[in-house]
Image 1 (cartoon, rainbow, N blue to C red):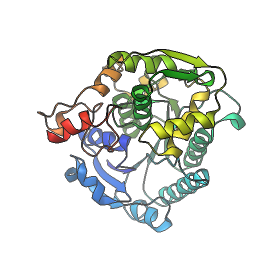
Image 2: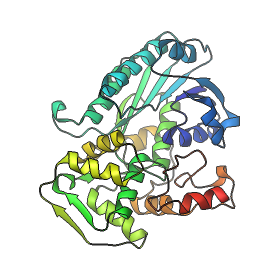
Image 3: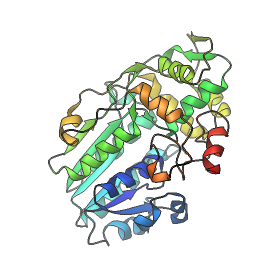
Image 4: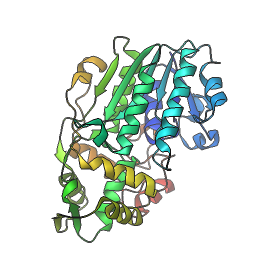
Length: 341
């Protein structure tokens, strides 16, 4: 199957592509800057197409004008700017129109886990994910939406924000509105779900995907500190405005302020999968058990094995092409050791 990955240079895309290649698919890597794809070890094994989801002609050329294209994996999310919701929705509309004018038979979208609250109470970040999901679901072919909460893995934005804040604060302070359950999923399990969604013709509709270990967010941060031998006092603060928390987090981390604010918004509600249908419907029988939270954190925090080639390394760890701030909150030590290797 010929599969276009939109957002190939992003974190999840960089892990999805090797999996799709392993499954025997012919992969087309779509990105705004094709030169950035050179950093990934799999870059020579894929076709490349310049693709900017904000431009009609770019989207049409990548999808409608490729007669062999059979599936699209959509991994683009906007988190910055005053109009990011409208930009996300418009991008999804362009992709849907291009797919409807093509031979594509399946669209897979990695969305955000939507809590069981009224729509008007969703954060701007989550309502945008939902709007994109709804737009793409109107496509005239098979559609699969995969809703995930925190994706664990070195280089994942949500993981890096959590670890950087855990390591850089002298004490661990949690506003009471952040004390909610979250069900993280390792990037290898998220990738397995995407791979299954692409190839399983009976899969259709929306699935919650989770790692199976719901945990309070403060406890998740405590686990990071335990695994890195940096345990420190922690306490909850009853009144702390979200804007203040986001501002401090942006200042302390290496992640763009708009992204930090969007991720912080999503911690105001429980983010737990409602069911586990995806395990039976998207994964092949005999698939390896899901990676536990403890194992995912341990592997994500480990120093990369520089003696092994990138394709042999753990996809939960830092890999070539990951953002410069993918240092596990520990300065540059892990990344520099990796680059020396």
